[in-house]
Image 1 (cartoon, helix red, strand yellow):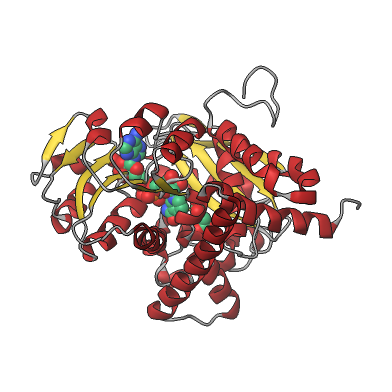
Image 2 (cartoon, rainbow, N blue to C red):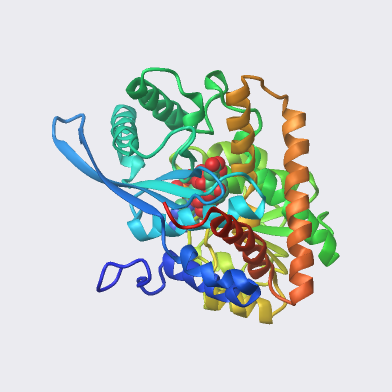
Length: 424
Ligand SMILES: NC(=O)C1=CN([C@@H]2O[C@H](COP(=O)(O)OP(=O)(O)OC[C@H]3O[C@@H](n4cnc5c(N)ncnc54)[C@H](OP(=O)(O)O)[C@@H]3O)[C@@H](O)[C@H]2O)C=CC1
Ligand SMILES: O=C(O)CCC(=O)C(=O)O
């Protein structure tokens, strides 16, 4: 954060600054609840931890970790953990705030939280990765728990990391606590459907948005930025529905094929260290050309701040599906709206992951596990109900889907805040 360290003083162009502007845009639609709106602009609690580990070569390395609980008015904190070299406190604050809005938008009984470590996990051995994960979990153990704050996977974290987190927390409390994290492997209280849930939610909301736009998915051209858990699953589901994935970008570069990339071959290659650009079934183009590729649907599924004003002006997409958190800066949002490009915002579009995380948490408490069809049917229903309600709100006030999602969610959050009262 710039100059003075303050929640309300964001670094220019930072994710937290984006989030604060998004909140400002919803205030006129909050009626009397607007008097509580400052609550949304301040995280409830932010913990910074030192994560020291002994590296394989005997040296000692220190990593900086965070867990931010943005708002817990509606329930325990919920949100993923990111391992990435660019993680900052301000980024984690924004990601935690987007979780508050997201869980309220789909009406899950949670608040919003997020965590992260500033580390490049690609440079660590498996043993070092486990040590970083376990030490971080112990350090944030004073504020997480099955009834207080429940982490989950995000960028560069997965089921194995959730298993280590669950084990470390359990060792420290002296009993197996499966409900402390979600996105776990199936043998450890994980849920069927969680791995694909976020991409599936992107597909469900995208299919409905396309239907309302009169955009036929059969033959629709789709460009996907970020080809990890979210991007690759969404791409697969759209391809199954008849769409063509014409461009994919991961951190190794950009690959394009206007006849459609063969995902059955691309996905296994993209998972290797060589990345998407080592796939031979398309042309490798400079990264900036990704935004020029002719497409009907654009799916940002990597990091924040990717859709800038300049990129918003040139995209040919009619529909943007935000698989990533915070991919569009506010100025670009306005340009897309002016150009008639429909944006399904992150806080509803990628809510499928936390929805199935909620199912996992419920299943862990009841020790009764559902089959995958049941999970997918329930996921579909929750996402569609939430999206339809948001759409009606957007139509009523003539506002974007993002501001409508904030209107629906912030009313729920601030109503809970008001009903709980302030005094100890
Ligand atoms: N996992 C989940 O359940 C949820 C995730 N999200 C959000 O979705 C987004 C992606 O998360 P997820 O799929 O889980 O993460 P992954 O780690 O599985 O994948 C991230 C992808 O983004 C790519 N990437 C990273 N940096 C860049 C870059 N500078 N340019 C292009 N591509 C890049 C990575 O490339 P490479 O593999 O080459 O490093 C990888 O393909 C994030 O914004 C996350 O917060 C939202 C809701 C839930
Ligand atoms: O599954 C979860 O609990 C959270 C997923 C997440 O971090 C997100 O939706 O951004």
